[in-house]
Length: 484
Image (cartoon, rainbow, N blue to C red):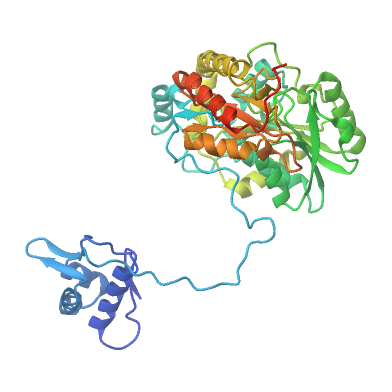
């Protein structure tokens, strides 16, 4: 068997070698591996590569030219003919199938679709605010020869200076006291959740999830065979009294409940920590966008209030920087560290040192704090424009959920007979991309509209939401009640 690129020619058996080369080339053309217009190697070069005579290759070429699959151009070479379109055989059936729980697609699609005219997608920051030139200089500096020992595999827990920088940042901004050894750098929030599930959950374990809540966390826990139990939220956050006594893990977003918005009240924070201690369960605190707060300071984190070692605290830089930089972190109690590091090594192996080192410098040099100030001012302006519309033309149809932080606002439809999914679909046809509240619940929660403002152009907010208000005027089946 001889190979040139992705061209494989079987010369292991006796027979006409020119025919073997001919069939290999024909299969490559018909299978699409050699595309129309692609130049083939000169006969002498391919003959040397395959270990056959030049005449053997020339005979195969001539036959394919005669049949119209190749074309020879004097002085230029031999090319796949433009008319030689690939013929792809149907795939054979297989008895392979994913195990239960994996027979569906992801909840979110890629960001490769064109940007809508009125972009109110949830959880997307504005990449235009990120200092790419500064970031490029930092990464380039960390890639210079001798900057790091790239000839060895680095600590899978993360670059030590970055773990130190994250620990300092969390202590200053969120009151989270953690040593660098308690911090693990992850590939975003999702990998942090995956590590927790690997280490803590067994099939059949009960995971309590806020309802409505974060769908990708729900799906991840279910993929490990956990029994995910929805627990309702209200204006004080997670209703702790509804937690099952058999709970092994509670997933919560106490600083800014996702997606409804209210924080977990202080009384319920104490109640949740007491529940975790009494029932020996873990609490995963997802502090996903607390950097952007527009009124009072946030309540203490569950992690800072926990004196029993029950809280695992996780966060992400995807909201504060850009999603394409997949940086997250997990702060976990010492007894879990060895297992989490082992799971991290099995998950990704080792780390990309230069990018982690660049982020460490970005934080340590005050560039992260400067970027947050700039971004927060921009998002505050956009938030006010959205709230202006919610209290104005949208108020006949939408009621605002209280929210003082983050990159989105959540509203509930006053007329619950209106199909929020149909509204969102019709809005998308008008270039207005918003999200439904109902998609975040599995047990028939309220219908509503969720509007992000991180990625939107400020100039598009008023006209976009005015068009959404007109659409709701057309959609509502009954006169809307007066605003409260």
